[in-house]
Amino acid sequence: MYLKTGVADKELVSNALPTEERRGSGPYAIIECFQEIPCNPCTEICPFGSILPMDDINDLPRMDYDSCTGCGLCAAICPGLAIFIVDESYSDTVASVSIPYEFVPLPQKGDIVEMMDRAGEYVTDGKVLRVVPNKKYQNTPVVTVEVPKDKVNEVRFLQPKQKTEIAMPKADPDDTENLPDTTIICRCENITVGEVRKMIDQGYDDFDELKRLIRTGMGPCQGRTCRHLIMQEISRRTGKKFDEIELGAFRPPTKPIQLEQLIGGKEDV
Amino acid sequence: MREVDIAIVGGGPAGLMAADAAASNGASVLLLERDGHLGGQLVKQTHKFFGSEKQYASIRGVKIATILEEKLKEMSDLVEIWTNATALGLYEDGVLTVEKGKKFVKVKPKRIVVATGASEKFLTFVNNDLPGIYGAGAVQTLMNVNGVRPGQRVLMVGAGNIGLIVSYQLLQAGVKVAAIIDAAPTIGGYLVHASKIRRAGVPIITSHTVTRAYGKEAVEGATIVALDEKWQPLPGTEQELDVDVICISVGLSPLAELLWQAGCEMRYVPQLGGHVPVRDSLLKTTVDEIYIAGDLTGIEEASSAMVEGRLAGLAAASSLGFKSDSLEADILDCKEQLKSLRSGPVGDHINQGMALVMSDK
Image 1 (tube, rainbow over the protein chains, first blue to last red):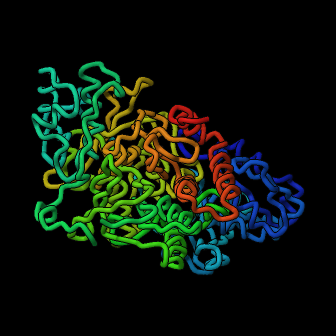
Image 2 (cartoon, rainbow over the protein chains, first blue to last red; image 1 turned 30 degrees about the horizontal axis):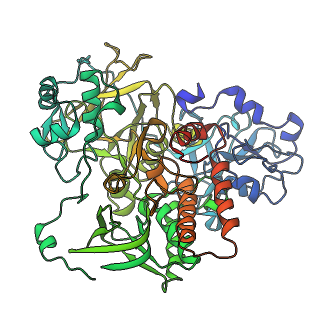
Image 3 (cartoon, rainbow over the protein chains, first blue to last red; image 1 turned 180 degrees about the vertical axis):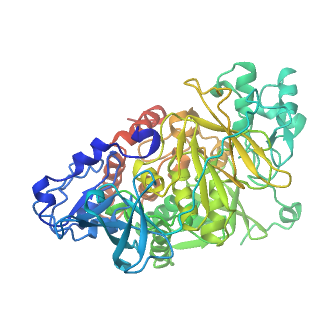
C-alpha cells in the first residue's frame, strides 16, 4: 500500500524500531526511509557512527542503536524529512517525539498543538517542549513535542490548533466518454482537438502537415507544449506507434523573434 | 562573429557545472542563459537535495545555484556569462545564433555543450484552457521566485517528484492541496516526499486522472475519474473537487530543438522522457563538436545533471587539448558518480534507456 498512498505500512515502521529494552533506555533516532534511493547525508552527519556506512549510495540506512544518543543531527539534515527522534525513557505516561517541521509560523515552547499520524489524521494533542531552528543545517527546524507515551510512534506531524478539514466532496456523475472535440489542444494558436481530428481523418497524419494546414505548434511555444499531445492524438486515431510518427522539422529560430532584430543584426558583439 | 573555445547553452545545474569543468581545465567559455539569472530550475527548488556530498546533498537547490555561480565568477578571466540570451539556432557549420537582449548575434565556438534541460508535458481535458490551470514549473516560479500564491485550493495532477515537491511547497506557502492524483497505479516520486505530504493531510490518489475543469471565467472545480488496469476511465467513479487551481505535473520532455537543427542522431526512448540524442560515454553526440548534459540527455534528477555537466565540460575541453593533471581521474570520478546514482531500483529505467542510445559501450 505504501507505493499507492505514501503511508508506510505498520510492519515497515515496527521493523525500524529498536528493541523494547533500548526504547526504554534513552532517546533514539527512527529512520522511516523504506525505499532505495541514491542518498546518504545521514551516514555522513552522525557524530557517533550510529548510522552505518553504506556500501552503495542506494542502500537503506541501517542503525546501531547502542551508540545512538538521539542527538537529532540526522533529523535536521535528512532531505526526505524521514528521521524522527523519540524519547520514551523519562516518564511512565508521556514521551517526546522530535519532528522536522518546515512551516510557518513555527510553534513556540509551551504551545499545545494537534498531532497527526502518517496519514494526516488527528491522533492527540501535544505540548511543544522545544524548537531548534537548525540554522547550521539548512534551516530545517526540529520541533520536540510531548505526547502520551502509547502514541509516540504513531504521531509524525503537528499543526496548530484549529485544524482545517480537507474534505473530498462526492461529485455528480459526469461523462467520461472520449474527449470532446471542443477541447483545446494547441493553446498558443487556440486550436481544438476536433480540428486536429478532422485533418487526421483526411489523411494528414504527421506533425508538419498539420502545422502547415492549421498552424498547430506555430505559436510562441513552437510546439513545446502541444507537439506531444498532437502526436498522441495521431497515434490514437491512426493506430501508428508514437515513434513511427514524423515529428516534423526543427528549424531556427527556436522562438519567435522580431524581424527588426534580424535586420539590425550585427556580425560582432 | 564571436569566437570561443566552448559555448555552453543553458545556465542550469548541468550548464553551470560544464562551464566550471571546462574553464578549470583552461578552456575559454561562453555560457548562455535565456533567463535573467543563472541557476535554471535550481532557483525554484527550496527543498534539500538527495544524493551525496559531491552532488551537494542536503543543501537546498536555490543555494546550490549560488554556490555554482560564485565558483564561475572566480574564473571570470575565462568564463563569460550572457544572461537574457536565448540560443535561436545551431547550424551544420557549427554557428550558433543567439538573441542577446534585443540583439541578434552569431557565435562560432570550437565545441558546444547543449544543456537546455526539458519542457513540461501537458494534458488534454475538457476546458484545459481555463485560467487557473498551470504547469508545476509555473506554480513554482510564481511562488518561489515572485512570491505570489497561485490560488487557494489546488488539485495536483501527477505524483512524480515534481508533483510531490510542488505540493509540499504549496502547503508551505499556506495554499491548500485538495488532492494529488496520478494515472499510474503507484506513486512515481520518492516515497519520503510522498510521506511528508501525506502526514500533512493531503490525499494521494493513484490510478486517477482529470477529465474536466469547471468554471466560468476561471477554474472553480475539477472532475477526476478512476482508471482501470488499461488506464481507461471507469464510468461511475467520477468525483468533483472544489479547487481553483489545477496544477499539471505529468512529466518532462527533453528540450532538443538545437540538436535536431544541427543534425544530431536522435532516438525515441520512453524511459528517458522522449526523443533524446545518441551519445558516447563522454556525452558527445553523433556530431563531433556537440556535447550534451542534463535533462536533455534523459529526464533525471538534478544531482545527475550536475555530474553530467561536469563530465561534458571535461570531455569538451579535453578534446581541444585542455587538460589538467587530474583530467583522467576527474572523468573517471564523474562516470563512477553517475553509475552510483543510477545503481538502485529508481535508476533501472534510466539504465535501460541509456543502453538504447549509447554509441559506444
